[in-house]
Each structure stands twice: as structure tokens, then as C-alpha cells.
Length: 162
Image 1 (cartoon, rainbow, N blue to C red):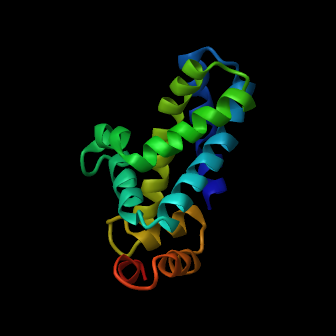
Image 2 (image 1 turned 120 degrees about the vertical axis):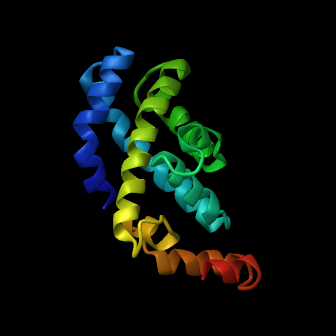
Image 3 (image 1 turned 90 degrees about the vertical axis):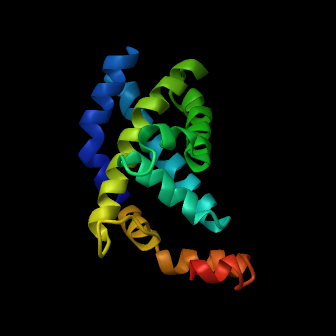
């Protein structure tokens, strides 16, 4: 599912990156797999660490809910994803950290906005919830939530995730 979302955004994201950074389209295109890996790693890490709320808040911010884009930029899950992206992009794209930071600030909010919109559409309501996020990302919500619950001992916060 995430691949389909990225394919739908590919032209828009790559042209925005190329236009605003001066990178050629080939380099800009290489940013998408780096962004995908960074987002999946960040979401999976947050969920398995029990921070489902942080993921939900990030996507709500990306779609204009909550505190909007300013809230997105302050979200710890987003900061982790952006940091991971910047580290990977410097080597994968062969660009300096400052350029990778700029690419991150352009590409990630666009992609997360699309994921948040897909999560809203996937849910039973217009609200973004853990099931709709996992569905939008094409991840197994039950298996992942079960792992997170097991990691947390099956009680307390773990029972909230199940």
C-alpha cells in the first residue's frame, strides 16, 4: 500500500525537490525509497516501543489536524524519521547534510500527508487510528500490535494497544 501511495506522489515529490533544491530529477527520485525506509522504520520503531500515540499525532499533524505542520515538526516520531532520512540520504544521494535536511523538510511532510489521508479513508470514521494507519501502510496491525503488547508485558500500556 505504501508503494502505491508513493507511486501516486512520485512526480509531485520529485519535481518539488528538484525545483526547490536544484537536485536533478534522478537524484530527487532516489529520495523516495530512502523516505519510505525511514518512515517504515520510524513507525515500526515507535509502535513496537509503545508510542502509537506519537505516530497518530504525527499523521494528524501532517493532515492539518491537531497543531498542524508546526505540530508535525515538533513530533518526536517525525524527528526520528527525519533524522534517519537525513543520515541515509547523505550517503544514498551523495549530498551534504544541509541539502538532505532541506529534502527531508520537503518530501516527508508531503508523504506523511498522503499516508494520513489514506489512513483517514481506511478507517471507519474520518479519524486516524492505529488500524487505519497500519492499513494505509500495508502493515499487519494485529501482528505488530501483538508484538508491542508482548514487549510491554501484556498489561498496562500493552493492554491499551491490543
